[in-house]
Image 1 (cartoon, rainbow, N blue to C red):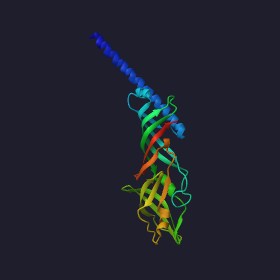
Image 2: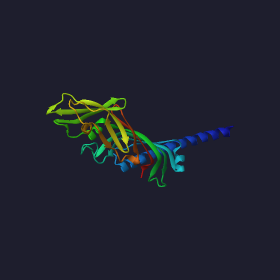
Image 3: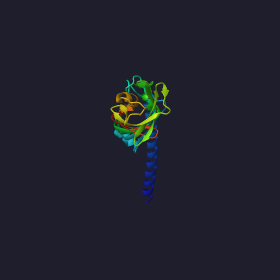
Image 4: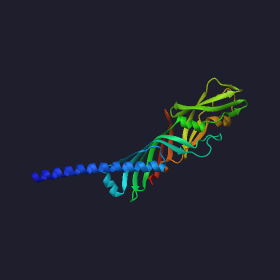
Length: 252
């Protein structure tokens, strides 16, 4: 009986030591992965990296991690080309906020220099202030003596964006902006904003002219690890984005 008690104590102690060693190892791995991801993606600050599953050491022995969660507070994604109908709208970078990606089936090389996830899903937000840069342009002629431009974006409710249009008619600025509700969608790597109806500026406008102002697009490319846009929806502070990908590079 005494021997059994001693054996149980030894097992408990060894188990405790294993748990401690496992948590120390996972903490080191998370920190190392965060440093490499910061360098690879050119981030201003170190991202949050959390390796899920227990025990970690047995996952390492098998050469694959069950799940790794990455959180990046601010990420400057690439944009390219002209967006919308007006030349020169597109900024070269667009700020993505609170990008969180859950990567599953993360296999890594023998020297730990690279790691690739079989699949990844995540969320992020583009603020209305950032998205407005895609619509911001010099006033555009939409009719004889009438110019207009988008001056504000906000949550329109029910998944819509409220687009504020400011117009000048015969040299006189209208007393207040005109608002229209717009739908937002994704086509490939482009966020598309399309007005559900045309703004009433007090004059008859041809649809193609009106949409020079109300409709615009923003390409978002170069997201970490090669993840891609999947869905978008208007929300309180900006456009909420869902991303996904396969064979996504975590490091290396």
